[in-house]
Image (cartoon, rainbow, N blue to C red; front, side, top):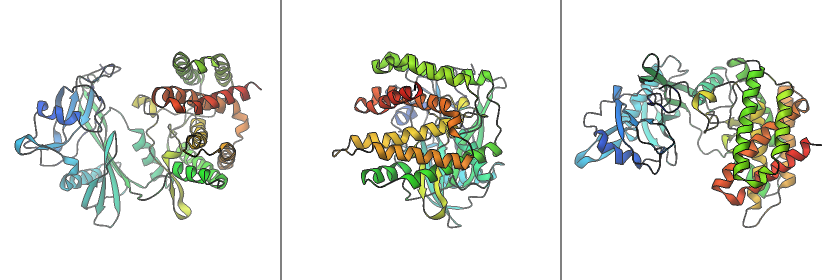
Length: 438
Protein backbone atom coordinates (compact mmCIF):
# COMPACT_ATOMS: atom_id res chain seq x y z
CA UNK A 1 0.00 0.00 0.00
CA UNK A 2 2.75 2.46 -0.82
CA UNK A 3 1.16 4.03 -3.92
CA UNK A 4 -2.23 5.52 -4.68
CA UNK A 5 -4.92 5.04 -2.04
CA UNK A 6 -2.98 3.72 0.88
CA UNK A 7 -2.75 3.70 4.61
CA UNK A 8 -1.00 7.10 4.47
CA UNK A 9 1.52 6.63 7.06
CA UNK A 10 3.30 7.93 4.06
CA UNK A 11 1.86 11.39 4.65
CA UNK A 12 3.65 12.85 7.62
CA UNK A 13 6.79 14.41 9.08
CA UNK A 14 8.55 13.35 12.25
CA UNK A 15 8.33 15.35 15.44
CA UNK A 16 9.36 18.38 17.42
CA UNK A 17 9.47 17.84 21.12
CA UNK A 18 7.79 19.28 24.18
CA UNK A 19 6.90 17.85 27.55
CA UNK A 20 3.30 19.04 27.21
CA UNK A 21 1.37 16.07 25.84
CA UNK A 22 0.62 14.45 29.19
CA UNK A 23 -3.07 15.34 29.16
CA UNK A 24 -3.49 15.09 25.40
CA UNK A 25 -7.06 14.45 24.26
CA UNK A 26 -7.96 11.06 22.82
CA UNK A 27 -8.67 10.58 19.13
CA UNK A 28 -12.43 11.01 19.49
CA UNK A 29 -12.04 14.32 21.33
CA UNK A 30 -9.54 15.52 18.74
CA UNK A 31 -11.83 14.85 15.75
CA UNK A 32 -14.16 17.81 16.22
CA UNK A 33 -11.20 20.11 16.89
CA UNK A 34 -9.19 19.08 13.83
CA UNK A 35 -12.21 19.31 11.51
CA UNK A 36 -12.38 23.03 12.33
CA UNK A 37 -8.70 23.80 11.54
CA UNK A 38 -7.95 25.85 8.43
CA UNK A 39 -5.33 23.28 7.44
CA UNK A 40 -7.70 20.31 7.62
CA UNK A 41 -7.66 19.11 4.01
CA UNK A 42 -10.98 17.24 3.77
CA UNK A 43 -13.47 20.03 4.34
CA UNK A 44 -17.04 18.75 4.54
CA UNK A 45 -16.11 15.26 5.72
CA UNK A 46 -16.22 13.92 9.28
CA UNK A 47 -12.73 12.84 10.35
CA UNK A 48 -12.06 9.45 11.86
CA UNK A 49 -8.66 9.73 13.52
CA UNK A 50 -6.11 7.21 14.64
CA UNK A 51 -2.96 8.35 16.44
CA UNK A 52 0.11 6.61 15.05
CA UNK A 53 2.85 8.45 16.96
CA UNK A 54 3.33 10.87 19.84
CA UNK A 55 7.12 10.71 19.86
CA UNK A 56 8.92 13.81 21.19
CA UNK A 57 5.66 15.65 21.80
CA UNK A 58 4.38 15.71 18.24
CA UNK A 59 1.14 13.93 17.61
CA UNK A 60 0.72 12.32 14.20
CA UNK A 61 -2.88 11.40 13.46
CA UNK A 62 -4.22 9.51 10.47
CA UNK A 63 -7.59 10.58 9.11
CA UNK A 64 -9.05 7.34 7.78
CA UNK A 65 -12.26 8.91 6.43
CA UNK A 66 -11.42 11.88 4.17
CA UNK A 67 -13.88 13.02 1.54
CA UNK A 68 -13.80 10.75 -1.53
CA UNK A 69 -11.80 10.21 -3.66
CA UNK A 70 -8.98 11.23 -1.30
CA UNK A 71 -6.89 8.56 0.37
CA UNK A 72 -6.32 8.65 4.14
CA UNK A 73 -4.30 11.69 5.20
CA UNK A 74 -1.69 11.99 7.92
CA UNK A 75 -1.51 15.22 9.96
CA UNK A 76 1.08 16.67 12.29
CA UNK A 77 -1.03 17.96 15.15
CA UNK A 78 0.83 18.64 18.41
CA UNK A 79 -1.82 19.48 21.00
CA UNK A 80 -2.39 19.59 24.73
CA UNK A 81 -5.58 19.03 26.69
CA UNK A 82 -6.97 21.42 29.25
CA UNK A 83 -9.82 21.72 31.72
CA UNK A 84 -13.32 20.80 30.54
CA UNK A 85 -12.00 19.13 27.42
CA UNK A 86 -10.36 22.20 25.87
CA UNK A 87 -7.65 21.57 23.29
CA UNK A 88 -4.65 23.84 22.70
CA UNK A 89 -2.48 23.83 19.59
CA UNK A 90 1.14 23.49 20.72
CA UNK A 91 2.35 25.80 17.93
CA UNK A 92 0.92 28.68 20.00
CA UNK A 93 3.23 27.74 22.91
CA UNK A 94 6.55 29.61 22.83
CA UNK A 95 8.26 26.90 24.87
CA UNK A 96 7.21 24.25 22.34
CA UNK A 97 8.41 26.41 19.44
CA UNK A 98 11.73 27.01 21.23
CA UNK A 99 12.21 23.25 21.56
CA UNK A 100 11.32 22.81 17.88
CA UNK A 101 13.94 25.42 16.95
CA UNK A 102 16.58 23.55 18.94
CA UNK A 103 15.70 20.33 17.11
CA UNK A 104 16.03 22.12 13.75
CA UNK A 105 19.44 23.43 14.84
CA UNK A 106 20.52 19.87 15.65
CA UNK A 107 19.49 18.49 12.25
CA UNK A 108 22.52 17.58 10.09
CA UNK A 109 21.21 19.54 7.10
CA UNK A 110 20.79 22.83 8.96
CA UNK A 111 22.88 25.72 7.61
CA UNK A 112 23.02 28.19 10.51
CA UNK A 113 21.67 28.19 14.07
CA UNK A 114 18.38 29.80 15.02
CA UNK A 115 19.55 29.97 18.60
CA UNK A 116 17.36 30.86 21.54
CA UNK A 117 13.75 31.77 20.72
CA UNK A 118 12.56 34.57 23.01
CA UNK A 119 9.05 35.15 21.62
CA UNK A 120 6.80 33.58 18.99
CA UNK A 121 3.46 34.22 17.33
CA UNK A 122 1.48 32.24 14.77
CA UNK A 123 1.02 33.88 11.39
CA UNK A 124 -2.70 34.01 10.66
CA UNK A 125 -4.39 33.35 7.33
CA UNK A 126 -2.49 30.26 6.16
CA UNK A 127 -4.55 27.45 4.72
CA UNK A 128 -2.33 24.38 4.58
CA UNK A 129 0.51 24.76 7.09
CA UNK A 130 1.28 26.75 10.23
CA UNK A 131 4.01 29.39 10.21
CA UNK A 132 5.36 30.90 13.40
CA UNK A 133 7.33 34.16 13.52
CA UNK A 134 10.11 33.95 16.10
CA UNK A 135 12.19 36.60 17.82
CA UNK A 136 15.61 35.28 18.78
CA UNK A 137 18.29 36.22 21.28
CA UNK A 138 20.56 37.30 18.40
CA UNK A 139 17.98 39.88 17.30
CA UNK A 140 17.22 38.03 14.06
CA UNK A 141 13.64 37.17 13.17
CA UNK A 142 12.96 33.69 11.86
CA UNK A 143 9.83 32.12 10.40
CA UNK A 144 9.32 28.44 11.16
CA UNK A 145 6.85 26.55 8.99
CA UNK A 146 5.27 23.49 10.59
CA UNK A 147 3.99 21.12 7.89
CA UNK A 148 0.50 19.85 8.71
CA UNK A 149 -0.23 17.31 5.98
CA UNK A 150 2.69 14.92 6.00
CA UNK A 151 4.19 12.95 3.14
CA UNK A 152 6.93 10.44 2.70
CA UNK A 153 9.86 11.93 0.83
CA UNK A 154 11.64 15.24 0.59
CA UNK A 155 9.60 18.41 0.44
CA UNK A 156 10.82 20.27 -2.68
CA UNK A 157 10.31 23.67 -1.04
CA UNK A 158 12.82 22.64 1.63
CA UNK A 159 15.41 20.91 -0.53
CA UNK A 160 15.35 23.55 -3.28
CA UNK A 161 15.73 26.51 -0.93
CA UNK A 162 18.35 24.68 1.13
CA UNK A 163 20.36 24.13 -2.05
CA UNK A 164 20.02 27.76 -3.13
CA UNK A 165 20.98 29.11 0.30
CA UNK A 166 23.91 26.70 0.61
CA UNK A 167 25.12 27.97 -2.77
CA UNK A 168 25.03 31.56 -1.46
CA UNK A 169 22.00 32.74 -3.42
CA UNK A 170 20.20 35.86 -2.19
CA UNK A 171 17.21 35.08 -4.42
CA UNK A 172 15.44 33.19 -1.63
CA UNK A 173 14.95 34.05 2.05
CA UNK A 174 18.06 32.88 3.89
CA UNK A 175 17.52 29.33 5.17
CA UNK A 176 18.41 28.33 8.72
CA UNK A 177 17.51 24.67 8.47
CA UNK A 178 14.87 22.00 8.46
CA UNK A 179 13.74 19.09 10.59
CA UNK A 180 13.29 15.59 9.25
CA UNK A 181 11.45 12.80 10.99
CA UNK A 182 10.30 9.24 10.54
CA UNK A 183 7.08 7.41 11.38
CA UNK A 184 5.61 3.94 10.95
CA UNK A 185 4.15 3.08 7.57
CA UNK A 186 3.05 -0.49 7.00
CA UNK A 187 2.72 0.23 3.29
CA UNK A 188 6.43 0.80 2.76
CA UNK A 189 8.93 -2.04 2.28
CA UNK A 190 10.82 -1.32 5.50
CA UNK A 191 7.70 -0.27 7.46
CA UNK A 192 8.95 3.30 7.94
CA UNK A 193 8.36 6.59 6.16
CA UNK A 194 10.54 9.69 6.40
CA UNK A 195 10.01 13.30 5.46
CA UNK A 196 10.25 16.93 6.47
CA UNK A 197 8.44 18.14 9.58
CA UNK A 198 9.41 21.80 9.73
CA UNK A 199 11.43 24.44 7.90
CA UNK A 200 13.07 27.64 9.19
CA UNK A 201 14.12 30.65 7.14
CA UNK A 202 14.65 34.40 7.23
CA UNK A 203 11.51 36.44 7.97
CA UNK A 204 11.03 39.28 5.47
CA UNK A 205 8.28 41.52 6.86
CA UNK A 206 6.43 44.25 5.05
CA UNK A 207 7.54 43.42 1.51
CA UNK A 208 5.11 43.66 -1.39
CA UNK A 209 4.84 40.75 -3.78
CA UNK A 210 5.44 41.25 -7.48
CA UNK A 211 1.73 40.77 -8.25
CA UNK A 212 0.81 43.81 -6.15
CA UNK A 213 3.70 45.87 -7.55
CA UNK A 214 2.78 44.97 -11.13
CA UNK A 215 -0.94 45.56 -10.56
CA UNK A 216 -0.30 49.02 -9.10
CA UNK A 217 2.06 49.96 -11.92
CA UNK A 218 -0.36 48.78 -14.61
CA UNK A 219 -3.32 50.49 -12.95
CA UNK A 220 -1.35 53.74 -12.83
CA UNK A 221 -0.17 53.22 -16.42
CA UNK A 222 3.44 53.16 -15.22
CA UNK A 223 5.89 51.13 -17.34
CA UNK A 224 7.01 47.86 -15.76
CA UNK A 225 9.60 47.01 -18.40
CA UNK A 226 12.75 47.60 -16.33
CA UNK A 227 11.38 45.62 -13.39
CA UNK A 228 10.19 42.85 -15.70
CA UNK A 229 13.65 42.62 -17.26
CA UNK A 230 15.25 42.44 -13.81
CA UNK A 231 12.75 39.73 -12.87
CA UNK A 232 13.73 37.72 -15.94
CA UNK A 233 17.41 38.07 -15.05
CA UNK A 234 16.70 37.05 -11.44
CA UNK A 235 14.87 33.89 -12.57
CA UNK A 236 17.76 33.07 -14.87
CA UNK A 237 20.10 33.39 -11.89
CA UNK A 238 17.95 30.99 -9.84
CA UNK A 239 17.91 28.46 -12.69
CA UNK A 240 21.69 28.70 -13.17
CA UNK A 241 22.30 28.14 -9.47
CA UNK A 242 19.93 25.17 -9.28
CA UNK A 243 21.58 23.59 -12.32
CA UNK A 244 24.90 23.52 -10.47
CA UNK A 245 23.59 22.80 -6.96
CA UNK A 246 21.24 19.91 -7.79
CA UNK A 247 21.39 17.11 -10.37
CA UNK A 248 20.37 17.61 -13.99
CA UNK A 249 19.28 14.88 -16.41
CA UNK A 250 18.98 14.65 -20.20
CA UNK A 251 15.51 15.14 -21.67
CA UNK A 252 15.39 11.63 -23.12
CA UNK A 253 12.41 10.42 -25.21
CA UNK A 254 10.67 8.77 -22.26
CA UNK A 255 10.77 11.96 -20.18
CA UNK A 256 9.60 14.07 -23.12
CA UNK A 257 6.76 11.67 -23.89
CA UNK A 258 5.63 11.68 -20.25
CA UNK A 259 5.55 15.49 -20.11
CA UNK A 260 3.63 15.80 -23.37
CA UNK A 261 1.19 13.06 -22.33
CA UNK A 262 0.37 15.10 -19.23
CA UNK A 263 -0.40 18.10 -21.46
CA UNK A 264 -2.83 16.00 -23.49
CA UNK A 265 -4.52 14.72 -20.32
CA UNK A 266 -5.12 18.28 -19.12
CA UNK A 267 -6.50 19.19 -22.52
CA UNK A 268 -8.89 16.23 -22.41
CA UNK A 269 -10.31 17.54 -19.13
CA UNK A 270 -10.60 21.11 -20.40
CA UNK A 271 -12.27 20.09 -23.67
CA UNK A 272 -14.88 18.09 -21.75
CA UNK A 273 -15.69 20.94 -19.39
CA UNK A 274 -15.30 24.05 -21.57
CA UNK A 275 -16.69 23.96 -25.14
CA UNK A 276 -14.58 26.97 -26.14
CA UNK A 277 -11.45 24.90 -25.53
CA UNK A 278 -12.83 21.94 -27.46
CA UNK A 279 -13.07 24.22 -30.52
CA UNK A 280 -9.28 24.66 -30.42
CA UNK A 281 -8.37 21.12 -29.33
CA UNK A 282 -6.96 19.98 -32.67
CA UNK A 283 -4.79 23.10 -32.99
CA UNK A 284 -3.57 22.73 -29.40
CA UNK A 285 -2.66 19.08 -29.98
CA UNK A 286 -0.67 20.14 -33.04
CA UNK A 287 1.38 22.51 -30.83
CA UNK A 288 2.00 19.68 -28.36
CA UNK A 289 2.99 17.33 -31.18
CA UNK A 290 5.59 19.80 -32.47
CA UNK A 291 6.95 20.25 -28.95
CA UNK A 292 7.52 16.49 -28.73
CA UNK A 293 9.80 16.54 -31.77
CA UNK A 294 12.01 19.59 -31.14
CA UNK A 295 15.21 19.52 -29.04
CA UNK A 296 14.67 20.00 -25.29
CA UNK A 297 17.21 21.51 -22.88
CA UNK A 298 18.50 19.43 -19.99
CA UNK A 299 16.02 18.90 -17.18
CA UNK A 300 16.73 20.32 -13.72
CA UNK A 301 15.05 21.43 -10.50
CA UNK A 302 12.76 24.42 -11.09
CA UNK A 303 10.20 26.41 -9.12
CA UNK A 304 7.30 24.52 -10.67
CA UNK A 305 4.42 26.89 -9.85
CA UNK A 306 5.85 30.29 -10.64
CA UNK A 307 3.76 33.45 -10.86
CA UNK A 308 4.05 37.05 -9.69
CA UNK A 309 2.56 36.22 -6.29
CA UNK A 310 5.54 33.94 -5.58
CA UNK A 311 8.08 36.77 -5.76
CA UNK A 312 8.82 39.54 -3.26
CA UNK A 313 10.23 42.99 -4.04
CA UNK A 314 13.12 43.40 -1.58
CA UNK A 315 14.62 46.85 -1.05
CA UNK A 316 17.99 48.01 -2.30
CA UNK A 317 20.30 45.90 -4.41
CA UNK A 318 18.78 42.58 -3.35
CA UNK A 319 15.86 42.96 -5.75
CA UNK A 320 13.48 40.09 -6.45
CA UNK A 321 13.24 37.21 -3.94
CA UNK A 322 11.46 33.94 -4.83
CA UNK A 323 9.19 31.97 -2.49
CA UNK A 324 7.35 28.65 -2.21
CA UNK A 325 9.24 26.13 -4.30
CA UNK A 326 6.71 23.39 -3.52
CA UNK A 327 5.67 22.93 -7.14
CA UNK A 328 2.19 22.59 -8.56
CA UNK A 329 -0.13 21.84 -5.62
CA UNK A 330 -2.21 19.19 -7.42
CA UNK A 331 0.81 17.09 -8.43
CA UNK A 332 1.87 14.23 -6.10
CA UNK A 333 4.79 15.18 -3.85
CA UNK A 334 7.17 12.69 -5.49
CA UNK A 335 6.59 14.28 -8.91
CA UNK A 336 7.31 17.81 -7.68
CA UNK A 337 11.00 17.06 -7.12
CA UNK A 338 11.51 15.46 -10.54
CA UNK A 339 13.80 17.49 -12.83
CA UNK A 340 11.77 19.55 -15.30
CA UNK A 341 12.14 22.09 -18.10
CA UNK A 342 13.07 25.61 -17.00
CA UNK A 343 10.70 26.94 -19.66
CA UNK A 344 7.79 25.83 -17.46
CA UNK A 345 8.73 28.59 -14.99
CA UNK A 346 9.14 31.09 -17.83
CA UNK A 347 5.69 30.20 -19.16
CA UNK A 348 4.16 30.58 -15.70
CA UNK A 349 5.45 34.13 -15.40
CA UNK A 350 4.27 35.04 -18.89
CA UNK A 351 0.79 33.88 -17.94
CA UNK A 352 0.97 35.96 -14.77
CA UNK A 353 1.57 39.18 -16.73
CA UNK A 354 -1.54 38.39 -18.78
CA UNK A 355 -3.46 37.96 -15.53
CA UNK A 356 -2.50 41.46 -14.42
CA UNK A 357 -4.14 42.86 -17.55
CA UNK A 358 -7.13 40.56 -17.10
CA UNK A 359 -7.60 41.53 -13.47
CA UNK A 360 -7.61 45.23 -14.33
CA UNK A 361 -10.25 44.62 -16.97
CA UNK A 362 -12.47 43.50 -14.05
CA UNK A 363 -11.79 46.62 -11.97
CA UNK A 364 -14.81 48.80 -11.07
CA UNK A 365 -13.15 51.29 -13.42
CA UNK A 366 -11.62 48.96 -16.01
CA UNK A 367 -8.10 49.63 -17.28
CA UNK A 368 -6.87 48.44 -20.68
CA UNK A 369 -3.45 47.05 -19.81
CA UNK A 370 -2.94 44.95 -22.93
CA UNK A 371 0.05 46.94 -24.15
CA UNK A 372 1.47 47.05 -20.63
CA UNK A 373 1.34 43.24 -20.43
CA UNK A 374 2.85 42.79 -23.89
CA UNK A 375 5.78 45.05 -23.00
CA UNK A 376 6.27 43.31 -19.62
CA UNK A 377 6.32 39.90 -21.33
CA UNK A 378 8.84 41.05 -23.92
CA UNK A 379 11.17 42.68 -21.39
CA UNK A 380 10.93 39.70 -19.04
CA UNK A 381 12.01 37.37 -21.84
CA UNK A 382 14.85 39.72 -22.74
CA UNK A 383 16.10 39.67 -19.15
CA UNK A 384 15.88 35.90 -18.97
CA UNK A 385 17.72 35.48 -22.28
CA UNK A 386 20.47 37.83 -21.16
CA UNK A 387 20.78 35.97 -17.84
CA UNK A 388 21.00 32.52 -19.38
CA UNK A 389 22.77 33.37 -22.62
CA UNK A 390 20.15 31.28 -24.42
CA UNK A 391 18.17 32.26 -27.51
CA UNK A 392 14.53 31.62 -26.61
CA UNK A 393 13.47 31.85 -30.23
CA UNK A 394 15.19 28.49 -30.70
CA UNK A 395 12.73 27.06 -28.18
CA UNK A 396 9.61 28.87 -29.37
CA UNK A 397 7.62 25.68 -30.05
CA UNK A 398 8.45 24.30 -26.62
CA UNK A 399 7.71 27.55 -24.79
CA UNK A 400 4.41 27.86 -26.66
CA UNK A 401 3.47 24.35 -25.57
CA UNK A 402 4.19 25.06 -21.90
CA UNK A 403 2.34 28.37 -22.00
CA UNK A 404 -0.64 26.71 -23.69
CA UNK A 405 -0.60 23.92 -21.13
CA UNK A 406 -0.70 26.49 -18.34
CA UNK A 407 -3.53 28.41 -20.01
CA UNK A 408 -5.54 25.20 -20.48
CA UNK A 409 -5.08 24.43 -16.78
CA UNK A 410 -6.25 27.97 -15.95
CA UNK A 411 -9.36 27.58 -18.10
CA UNK A 412 -10.46 24.58 -16.04
CA UNK A 413 -9.69 26.36 -12.78
CA UNK A 414 -11.55 29.52 -13.73
CA UNK A 415 -14.57 27.67 -15.14
CA UNK A 416 -14.92 25.86 -11.82
CA UNK A 417 -14.15 28.74 -9.47
CA UNK A 418 -14.39 32.15 -11.19
CA UNK A 419 -16.43 31.81 -14.40
CA UNK A 420 -16.28 35.57 -14.97
CA UNK A 421 -12.50 35.27 -15.37
CA UNK A 422 -12.39 32.35 -17.81
CA UNK A 423 -11.97 34.79 -20.69
CA UNK A 424 -8.42 35.59 -19.52
CA UNK A 425 -6.91 32.16 -20.23
CA UNK A 426 -9.25 31.55 -23.18
CA UNK A 427 -7.84 34.66 -24.88
CA UNK A 428 -4.34 33.26 -24.36
CA UNK A 429 -5.35 29.91 -25.86
CA UNK A 430 -6.72 31.67 -28.95
CA UNK A 431 -3.64 33.87 -29.30
CA UNK A 432 -1.13 31.04 -28.86
CA UNK A 433 -2.74 28.62 -31.30
CA UNK A 434 -3.03 31.42 -33.87
CA UNK A 435 0.64 32.35 -33.45
CA UNK A 436 1.80 28.75 -33.52
CA UNK A 437 -0.12 28.15 -36.73
CA UNK A 438 1.51 31.10 -38.48
